[in-house]
Image 1 (spheres, rainbow, N blue to C red):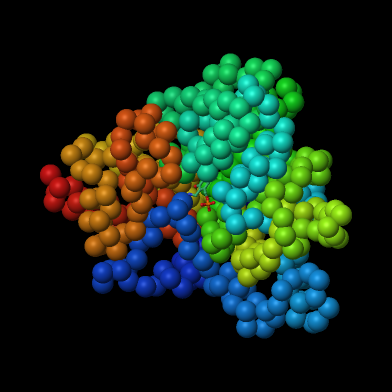
Image 2 (image 1 turned 135 degrees about the horizontal axis):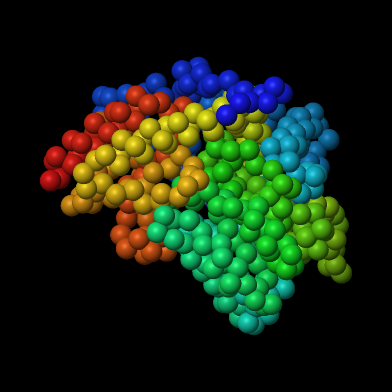
Length: 416
Ligand code: PMP
């Protein structure tokens, strides 16, 4: 197809230069070079993220906000600068819409407890897809128990794609909230989040998108998606563990009560009554994960510097390469063959348990994940107890996929 003159071509990713930024990639495992194919569970960290967190501890460690001394001022500035980086990374309208949390799980629980719990009445309905991570199922089950609301699963097809028409058919005038994963960690499916959010918005239904597996692989624009809430964890996108954020539309956050009480989230406390802090601090009780937040900001800068479009193109190439080679293997079945996928391949092999495959390939230095991937309803749908899963990041190479496939062949021979 001819390109328009003003169309910008994405320069290819310099994978070796990217790899050089990740110290861990030079280590060996069982005497073999590490082949890390478990980025969907947790990505590795580049030097800039490691340095940003260690600089905080070694140069300006102090508690944030409230402090008048220099270290506290510097820590507060760096902490709030990260919030701006997250706002820019998601294209949110304001930092008031960015609440720091421990990760996606806490972000979704926050919505469940502070938005849903005070509003839901017995018989109200929440819809989530069948391919959700447990963190976008269980918080809703809890809030249903607390309020008498009902949780309805929206089905997927044999390729692991959301059946949007069936989701639409589930909507009634009692539907108050729809939760949907942007990119499935178990199947790789990229969901039509814009379409589902538009469908919900027309009917006044609130939307919660789980963006854990989207941010490391694709540009995310919460305003273009049109969601009300967007949750993610930094450790999937090259940032630290134990930190993430919830984007929430300001008008909704404003109307929500705090969900945890303590320091930071108040303006004034007395036994006669307490006034809560401004957004987003109202939802950030207690001393936050300061180093984590600063590292998360560095991770957004890293993605920006490397270029998310270049990363996406590189990972899609790996996905196509690995998928084609794996499809040629006798007795191997890929679960999740959606038209639009992130760089995740879940698979089962006839006669071999996923855990045995994982253990054998580990001896070749290959790290992959086995199990239910915190998505048991997906396993039930495909009628398997577990899958093995390889997932790729900006540092993954075709040569690593070849090493994995050789190791997999050994495993198949041993287990046959
Ligand atoms: N959603 C998805 C799609 C995920 O992949 C994960 C992590 N596996 C989570 C939610 C939960 O993330 P965390 O445990 O960091 O809160």
